[in-house]
Length: 308
Image 1 (tube, helix red, strand yellow):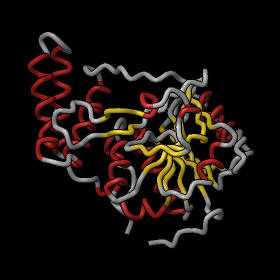
Image 2 (tube, helix red, strand yellow):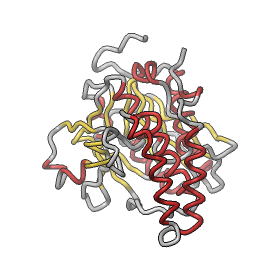
Image 3 (tube, one colour):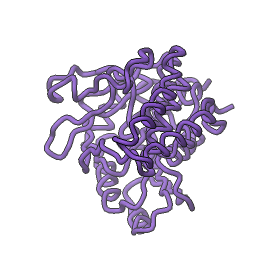
Image 4 (cartoon, one colour):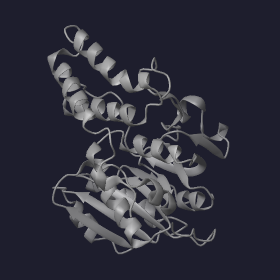
């Protein structure tokens, strides 16, 4: 394992994944350029965008950009896998993952780098300043009766940022402001590209915690979401397939007892039985396909395993 850098001397690479949101990306890059702690590299994975993303990136001269234009849309999971691997291979001490629809406050990176912990998240707020950090403070993979493993989140536990302690332990993360040291990557590997979208970040956090790492939300690391959260997805559409499948994979891989690992089968049965009155045939087909696909993903994808 690589020896850790001395405190205060660590380097940091930012990994940004983007797809067809050039104007949001431009604002996000403005936020990185304004950081009081300058990042050593900004690795941008462009997921086959067809808008003016390339022009936005080519116009930047104020950031140490390293851009990969993927010929295919790899999804968020594939993009973060590619970006984190590039940051690791380049030797950076910490990797800060960022989506294209958030803007870090000027002191965000400085606040994170000041905390001597292996896994951190910045704390998100909306444009009005309201706390909207959805990271779980209780992610339960023990109780088979818990339909949703997330039992409580930062924003359901604290009324606002001011009421938070400086550090809050969390059990899962979003790849919007998550920071990880290279020693963790060496031990647990990379984000799993096979997830495409949804739950790749939660699964990565479970792996980190299983390896004995604690994850901390840093109150004073402010990240501003530019779009409202939309937690209500059409479970009968294409996103519904990934939501079901990847939730099932998390349970099959990391469920702490046999009943929890059997829970995806129960959910599949209930959705199919209720489909005449809820969700319809399309959702029933989605959940059946999701269960079949999840069974083949019980082991971590080879490319996501720890580097040799």
